[in-house]
Length: 188
Ligand code: SF4
Image 1 (cartoon, rainbow, N blue to C red):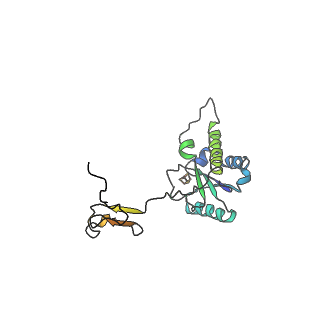
Image 2: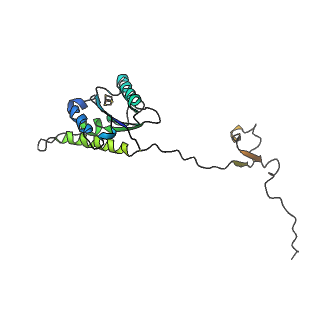
Image 3: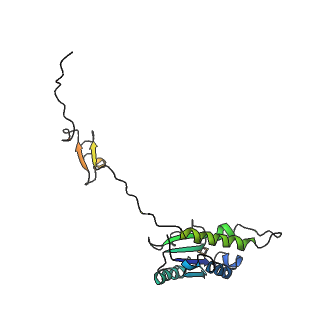
């Protein structure tokens, strides 16, 4: 599980114009996960070189193993928001799923900040429960029998990996193949 989180709230792309970002920062600082979030801050443009450099500096200084980026959709800027295999990244989509898509209802005002707070809280909680999965390497067969493959020189695509034990049946049977035995049972 991610144990030291950094929470960053972007002000770019209308987020800062539509939401009180300082209030969101305070909300994250006072949440029940605040004890595992040594860094909670806003950024003017998180995807800029300066914005990314600031996050990287916090990761190095605080030993963060997870960052919650409250900005745009994870479908964009994914190539920028990568901080190495030891740091998990959670993208909270305040842009497309909040400020760009929600229209305040005059009869029920004040919904937008509540939606944003929910998203931020959910992103923090999700990352606090996430872990980097250990790769599962399946056991595979190391012996390959090629039937009718011709010589490797004539069919280079049939060439097996060096580690594989192979035998071409077109030349002679492999030593581990069952050899025909003479029939010893009496004739009917
Ligand atoms: S991180 Fe996303 S929301 Fe923030 S300025 Fe860049 S594109 Fe816009």
